[in-house]
Length: 238
Image (tube, rainbow, N blue to C red):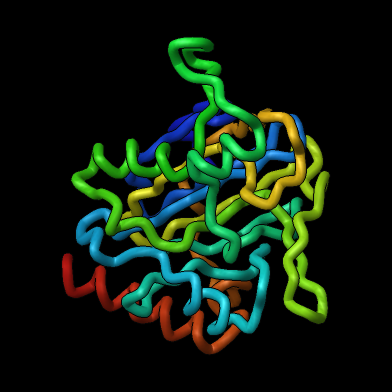
């Protein structure tokens, strides 16, 4: 795979770009314990966005890992998880906001700490979305890459600390031209009492051809249908 782009997303930082179909985004947890909250939109028609219920129920899963796909709310696939060494990524717990960060970690403003001030994922999302003409009404349930959350028999959720060791890698192969919005703020259920979001390396490569027996596409009938919907969408737009 040919590298096209590389950037370090600092702890608490944010980033948004369109990643074209046929490219791979590699996320690397540099220090261990990172969390990357993500939103996905059709770059050409951002009214189409990531759909958490369809992604989970269609693949009969609670967590995401290699072999899964991320579905849009129009029955198509944004991207496929083609490689994953962390093994578990959360998509049900949402993200931090200003009130939660202040309650858990206290407050530290830009006037006090400059670029080391305490950030939260919701405000970071809104800043990045505004660059693309989007706003509050466009925020949907987000993904949390590198974070593991388990449920007990009563349905209570627990964050699993240290689930992603340093060097953990997740690779996403994009099947659509996708506006990707990321922020590296701490997970909302992270029990840590210290504000210490971790950095993540972003690397974008050209993707190898999709093989006929591709694990992600053929992992379930729902993925096969959504992938064909995506192929049809681009065939008719060409």
